[in-house]
Length: 138
Image (cartoon, rainbow, N blue to C red; front, side):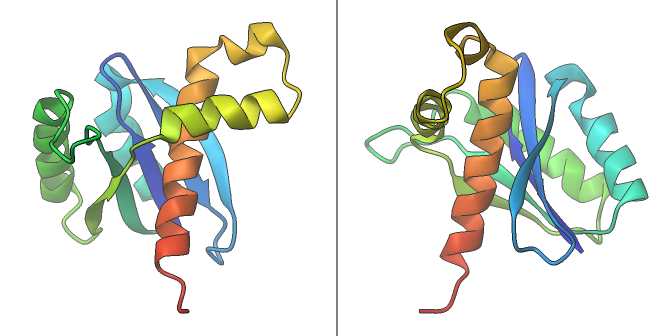
């Protein structure tokens, strides 16, 4: 079963997913946030998804960011429409910075690095990779 990660944004949202063996995190797509709930429900209906990880937006001081007022209702709706799929929050601090750094180090062109949808998808992948690493046994 796959794990789906969501980097929730005000306008658009990046998504990432594991392979069925949960070994590798890959970018899935970026969707308009207005279409996100429908996209997730459709995806979970097509693919076996064990759980959904949603990026938890925190400020440097540990307090919730202003986007939390949109994420909480979204997470509550997901839990209602997909009651058999656990939905977890995972700290997403630094994911945008890491996404930009990954793009820079990979040699992606300057124009491609300005593609905010790609940044969102890479950020979701970083959230998922971080969640997976946090679950590994020492």
